[in-house]
Each structure stands twice: as C-alpha cells, then as structure tokens.
Length: 297
Ligand SMILES: Nc1nc2c(ncn2[C@@H]2O[C@H](COP(=O)(O)OP(=O)(O)OP(=O)(O)O)[C@@H](O)[C@H]2O)c(=O)[nH]1
Ligand SMILES: [Mg+2]
Image 1: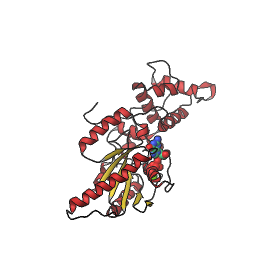
Image 2: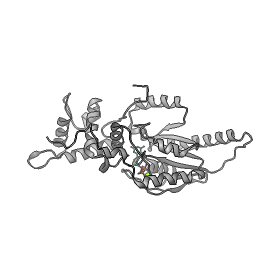
Image 3: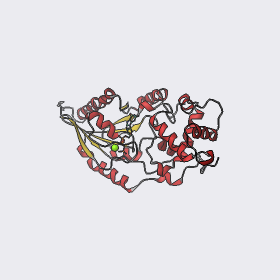
Image 4: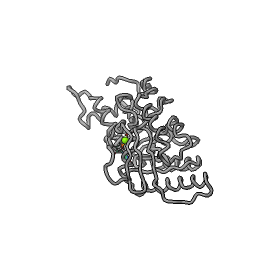
C-alpha cells in the first residue's frame, strides 16, 4: 500500500499559515476593545493551551478575560479534570462547557458580570453596583465554536456556524436580551505554530483547514494516536479486533469495511482519510484530548 507522506513530517508552510484576513481581524478586535466590558476567549477543551493564542492575548492587553474551553463533550473527561486543577493554579477565570449544555453556558454570563463588577470596584472604591448592559467580545481560534456559543446564548440562529474554519468573516453584534450584547469575531490563528505536533492537533480539531494541513498527515496522526491510546471506541467503530495492528493494516481494514475501494479492490486512501477525520470530528472515535497540563502526566 502506497502512501504519499511521512506522518511525522507535516508541511513547513503549516507553521507560518497566517493569511492577511487574520491580521485584519486582529486589528478589528483591537479597535473594538474600548466598546466591550470583557472578552470571552474560546478555546478547545481537547487542547486547552495550544488552542490559545499568545498574539491575541497580547492584543487584549489589560482587558478582563474569561477563558471558555468549549467542546468539552469531545474531550477526555479525566484529562479535563487535570486541566481544571492546572487552571485553578493559574488564577485566571475559566469555564469548561459544551454547546449542548445551556446551563453551563449561561454561567459564563453570570461569571462575566461578577468579574466586570469586581474590576470596577477595584478601580474605584466608591463605585456603586448598577446593572448596566454587559458587552462581551467573543474571540478565539477558527472553528472553536464562537458563533455556536452566541447562538445558544441568544436562543436563535443569530450568526452563521459551520463545521469548517473561517465561517465568520465579519464582526457582528448580537443582542442576547436587554442586559447583554455579544460581539462575534472571525477566528484568528497564531502567526506561527512552534511545534509540528501542535499543527497536527490543530488540524485534527479543524482549527486549520484541511487544504492547508493535508488530510493525509492529520488522519495518519489520528490513527497512530488512537492506536497508542488503545481507544475502545476507535477499535469498535472500525471493527478492529486484533491487537498490535500497524497504521497501514488499520487503513486497509477501514477501506474494506467502509467500502473505500478502487478498481481491483485497492484501497482508496483519500476517502479513508476523509472518513477518519469526519468520524473523529463528530466524536465517533471517542472522547480524546491531546497533551496534558505542563508538569502533569
Ligand atoms: N461537539 C461539539 N460541537 C460543537 C460545539 N460547539 C460548536 N460545535 C461545532 O463546531 C463547529 C464550528 O462552530 P462555529 O460556531 O461555526 O465556530 P466558530 O468558532 O464561530 O468558527 P469561525 O467562525 O470559523 O472562526 C460547528 O459544526 C458547531 O456545531 C460543542 O460544544 N460540541
Ligand atoms: Mg464563527
């Protein structure tokens, strides 16, 4: 069976993928900061640190921020617990949520109001709490669920969502109720991804588009990761019964059971890669996290 690439060697261009529209989006974020009380930074619960963006954090400066780790329903619950301990130690407000849990999402607004009020009191000891309209800017990497969170909080399809990075291209204010307004913004990547492994994680969660990262590299990385971690959902999904299978054997098996075959019964690997990525992103290959908090195994 012939594959094109070595999965451990993703393309060099990947590390520097930062299109002009993202630089523009970042400038627009900066220009609107003065109009908001707080920023929600949406990250992916499967990779809480690598789905952050140092560049974005620098842009936000002293503006109050709440880190929202979304898609917790797709992340390994045990590893999420470790991350919670780690975030507690960082003394930075955070929430793990998923978009199907409206109650958890609504806590973000309550917590945001508390943070904003506490900050106002700190800046002015004579400040008397008055219920003013809360304005929140929603930022984060592409495809982390920013627009979905807004729609869930607004209880309507106020902004478009899609299972691909780069859906939101313009900022948009959305009124939640008389007390809360949210500003949706386009996803912004860091200008540089330092480690090849991080590029693969970001591709797996689809923060990077497949035509940039290459479906083959990402699918091969996923198969290896799920095999190494002996994921039972992965084994069951593709009816992998034998232990110690190689990546090539798994690809062949998936091609056979899912009918991804060319003439003469040869595996259609491009279709297999697409299928693995789609299944992983739907959560059909089990709850998976990549990496653990610094200092923890
Ligand atoms: N399983 C799961 N899927 C989610 C969750 N939140 C969002 N999604 C899905 O993630 C995909 C991306 O959601 P969007 O809200 O468009 O993401 P975005 O951050 O606005 O993306 P850009 O506008 O491209 O930056 C959609 O298919 C959503 O249905 C979640 O908590 N769990
Ligand atoms: Mg969006």
